[in-house]
Length: 636
Image (cartoon, rainbow, N blue to C red; front, side, top):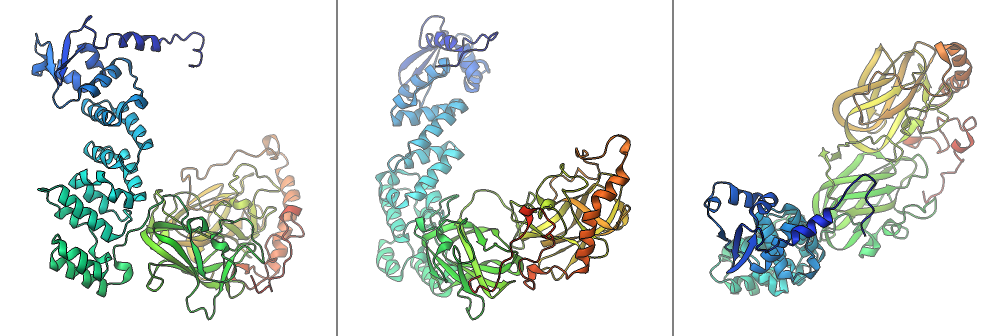
């Protein structure tokens, strides 16, 4: 039932629709007769024109049908049964698609397209998507192609891709248009044995005598057939020239396996490197945790797969998919229960012999979740090879996912160009150097709740720095940071970036400037894994304080303006600022001073144990302390 109409609102649309429906094919007040397949339909010009641009142009646009005295118009190439349903829809806006036969439904779709009823066209298309089956999908796809119904075409193609072999043997395939057959089999996602595709094309050519089959045959990938199939099954048909067969054989013998135009199954947004999809780990140590789908339960002893970095000869960890799949993305979780980093590369293959490297992070330090994109490829084998571990000589992977995503992404030099801030806890970034009450306060996204005691990260001027490690290398060209601004102080600083924490490149030099609050930094686009912020001056004391950091900058326009002062800020007229600052910052300044006298933080390079941290555990809140842990375990 319809929900009650709010008081003061009159809504009698249903009654209006019912009243108009009474005029359908009714001689009362009718001023035009539409003749369809010899059947007269009484109608009203003004209603037809109000509902359809097509009829408006016909009846009032100066065409011959709009001439005075015209009382009857014949609509050619129109189904009377379909038009009867459409005419009722024109008057009352309703159709029960469940009550209409499939063949009539397609006729109504054609009329909706012809007469410009876009909403009806969309509704029928959506219904057809829900009732697709092997018997009707070819006809629906043909009509969707004819009317350029992009969304319906896409759904049909995805259905056909998933059921390619069944579609090839269905009689409906023989009735497809030449253009539709060509469009289907030219897709790499039309996954079926090539000889089966050829045989179905041969049957189509026999069924459609007089129609040129050569455009379709050009889409058959002869180089994917065996020598026996080419010589003993293709050649006798006479559909393919001897030169084309010889060219296919030459391509097979002279090309790399990966250079052949393979077909693969396309399953959007699904992890096909999972045991539930039949994937197997065929090389690598430990149980195949990497494909079990559990990326939560892992520790020092279990929940990961591994391989030795030395004397592995590039064998790595190899996943065999159940069949060739089209993928363009990997997600991989590197073991991350401490601050270690890894370097690695990923290769793909179709035969476990000829491998091609599609991700190369062997020169970068990476941690935790890796989000990796590349151009779509047909893949059967995935090999992950670790080249470096900052703690020991073993490479550990907790989870690997392979999938095809329809989400757009931009790559440069093989690296992802992020469109949103990746210096976040959710993106697995971390602060590896700097002093704070909360380890990752700098990247927790909170730009409002900070005061004299908390919500910022700092370092002693002249010693140390604030360093943020991103989970993986990104191509970046902007960043933004918020300097502590609860009073009128200003800072000077510079920023450097690196991919290995050894070689640094300066991207911002503000050592001779007095900077306050929000800072926007623009630099030449380049790979970035680490960001080092070094304070050089503070007009109030000897400590550099930063509240927030992001890369890339999400809101470049918000620069150089004070934030709303937090609740803990001193009262009116700024009274007590000086006294409040000296009292509240004393402890944090002492921490920075004591930290600067100790050894430099090098955990990311594996030269100090995991419990080494710039967050002075004995002085941090209990929840922020790191448990001491031995790293001598050979497993990790």
